[in-house]
Structure formats: structure tokens, C-alpha cells
Length: 308
Image 1 (cartoon, helix red, strand yellow):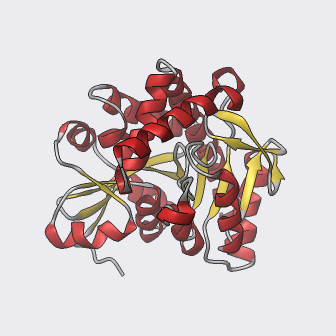
Image 2 (cartoon, helix red, strand yellow):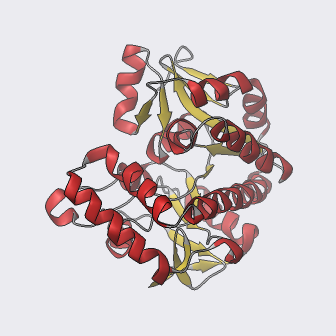
């Protein structure tokens, strides 16, 4: 159990949690590793504003000087956006960050873990990690999947990142017993695109039905797993799957040629895809993050009603 000495909850967020009001967690890697300053800080503030305008309290999460911070002040957002040497932290990195009083921006898995410690059940992000292409030989599988199997937080994303093996990731999620549902579509999305060529494991339509699934999972059945909610990128901003696939193949070839491995893989691939699409993939990425924040807030509002 995290002690008060290494868990700090912003007063606005703490009050909302205590009152049972809707709260949406947000990750921080997009701030420290996702884009340059000042766009990173501006985007973080904009996404928090979207959550607020849709009726929920935002809680951007990071580890600052060994403290798990749930909700960040403007000064703390600025620090994450400008400070050099901020670690990219998944769940396994959290003990080291706390022990060494270091600073880390949280990935999906680490954000889920800290959200659960604080009592937050809804989390908005861009896309989730999964089984990397070629994982049969590299064993490169994101910790996001194992965290979804054991941590009761609903993750609203635009699906599995399209640089990954989506089919195998869905198979792995099934094996782990993680509920997977698509919002408003019979097709499973692929991050930049509204379809991946794979069917949705299940479909629900809108925040009320999705909140009902959260309620059924945790409050009725007593399951302790997370929930993956795929929220397709808005149609006006998508890059069709057949178009983006060629850029992904080129990026993967460059990755292999340069021998890049580990946590550097995803940032490298996303950067190369952005270059290949002349920035269109970044526009789509920002659009889907905004869309996911609004959807997550609406789900949090409806779930608060069910629990109230």
C-alpha cells in the first residue's frame, strides 16, 4: 500500500475522488517524450480542459522526485515539458523511481497502476501497447497488457498502436481475460485508422453503455482486471489503413537496420511514421487524443451516476 509520503494527490482531484465525482487520469509521456516544447505543455493543458468541459476532473499523472503525483499543477506540467533526463516509466520502473527519488513520465501501464492506487477508474490515452511485430523472436510485448490483466482501470484509446501486431495483441488480451470493446463500431480500429481489418470483439454505443460495462465488470462481477475501450479516431482525421501501412513498413525496415530495441522502439517508429506522412500522422494522433479525452470524461460522468 502506498504511504502518504510517496503519493501526492492534487487537492482538486482529491476532493473529486472523495465526493465520488468523475475523474479522468491522463498519462505524462506525451508531455516529456511525445512532442517538443512548448507544444507538449500546451497540448497537456488543452486535454485537461477537454476533460473539464465534459464534466470530469482531469488528473495528469507522473512521478516527481520519487513522489507519485496524481494531478499536476501548471508549474509541474511546465517542468515535465522542459526538464531534461525525465525517465520514461512503465510499472517496473516505479519502485526504482521512488527509491532514488527520481522523476519519470508515466506510460499506460504505470499510469494505470498509480490511478488505481488513488482510486481513479477511468483513464484516457492515445493508443495502448501490445505485441510487437516479430515478437516470436524478440519477445517484445508491452507491459500495458499485463497491467490490464491485473489493474481495475478502464483505458480509453484509439486502439492498439498500428506499428504493432494488432491480431496477436487481441489474442493476448483474450488469454489474459481482459474485456475489449469498441465504441460505436463493429470494426476494431488501428490507431490512425478507423479499421484494422479485424472485427470488434464486442461493440457498445456511447458513454452510458460503456459505463454500464465498467459497473458490470467491477461492481457486479467483482473482477479485478482492467478494460480496454477502443474509441476510433474521428473520420475527418483518420489516415486509411492501406495508406499508413506502407509508412509503417518503411519505419520497421529502418528500425531493424539500425538495431534499435527496448523502450526506444515505439518512439523511433512513431517519429519515422510522422516523417513519412509529412506530419499527417501527428495531426491524427492529436485529434484522437482529444477525442479520447472527451469520451473518457463522458464515461466517467455516467459511471459516477451508477456508483452514486
